[in-house]
Amino acid sequence: MERSSYPSEIPIFEFPGGIHPQENKQLSNRSPIAKLPLAKELVINLKGQAGNRSIPCVAVGEQVLKGQLIAKSDGIFSSYQHAPTSGKIIAIEKRPIAHTSGLEDLCIVLSADGDERWVELSPAEDFTALCRKQILARIFESGIVGLGGASFPSHIKLQREDGIDTLIINAAECEPYISCDDRLLQDNTDEVLKGAQIISHLYKDLNIIVGIEDNKPSAIEALKAARTKLRMTFDIAVVPTKYPSGGEKQLIQLIAGKEVTHGKLPADLGLVMHNVATCFAIYEAIIQDKPITDRVVTLTGKACGKPGNYRIPIGTPIKHLLESTQTLKSQKLIMGGPMMGFEIQSINAGIVKATNCIIMADSNELKPEQTSLPCIRCGECMNACPASLLPQQLYWHAKADEFDKTEEYNLFDCIECGACAYVCPSDIPLVQFYRYAKSNIRNNRVEKIKADNARERHEARLDRIERVKLEKAEKHRKAAEARRKAAEASGQADAKKAAVAAALARVQAKKEANHEASNSHQADKTKEPKA
Image (cartoon, rainbow, N blue to C red):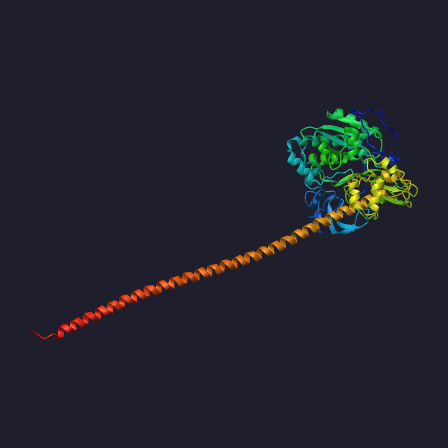
């Protein structure tokens, strides 16, 4: 493939490992971004991003406009979902989803009316008039996630403000076949760079670096022209084409010469990184007030009738894409690239925000699945690992369900790039074992949290029972004490009353005695003889 002769404007470093798979980007990157006919039904997966599932806020039978909110985020680690077109909500139910498991999940099914009527928008051409809080709120409410494949909510990545000095725009796009970011840079260069300006504005003007592989000469020239036109200041870091140079940690090593060590984030090094498509989405959200309703997707592969890059509404069924590109004989469908993507189990599933590519392969195009052989301990996987891990040790421990050992070998530093499996002479699906171990560790953590919560609730219940018991005993003691005091007080009152009564009786008796004595004296006087 053609390489750029344009030199990097800043020094380029190296990262360990890496491989050079056949690129095959020329199948799709030679024509401008186009559109396909609108599908009659769109299936919007509510778990179509990293984090929690979105919560529907529309009802079956409701008419919606393009860009209208149809599902709210479930907490900060989630994403809003918007209607990809105008039409009617005909179902909210479980449907097949674009996932390696082939399982069903909750989806909103929208019947398109073909009118493409937008909800009322409030553009903000001067983004500098918006404060940081307003910009982050718009990014969040527009449902923007990382569109390079991870689909991590973008507003979370932008929360940290202190200590950030550099913005890296990830235009490496190292996966074979995928060319959507390449075409987006060629066709919408100004919008991508204006999105970068908005991000820079959040941090009071950052140093901007565009990291791009040397197999994208047209995009590099478009960046140079736009820099002059927009009078922007940024560096273009042209890195050698090597997979996975587009990985976040790997591109940082190439451009900044810094390593994001275990347990650290790019922000700890003063860096923030965003994908080309994410910058474009931020531009649309802030300047045009448009949420994510579609994205550019590479449709490619030797079986694809019309390979190219297309702007496709979120939720468009893969079956519709096959029909629209006149692809009838594909032997295998891969969502994503051949290295990190997965085989599509149902063509009725709709695309999600993370869908950057669909490979429609013929029977001889991709490496067929092989029966894995025993590990020969050749060490090729270790040499290819860009994260400097020990894939062989991780494989043995994952296979033996020794998950604590895999964590000791930094399993979660694995970016699942597939380089180790690519070079494995025994055709061992190494990444599958790593994903299996990660899934079990996450599940065990969830179960531990549940068990800890249950234990805490049980202990709290026992404490509450004991507390109530003690409170009742204290209440009874106080009641008995009150009765005793009342009784004593009553006895003292009765004794006092008796003493008063006795005193009154004595006085009365004395009075009566005196009265009788007086009467007796008078009687005696009456009986005395007269002189």
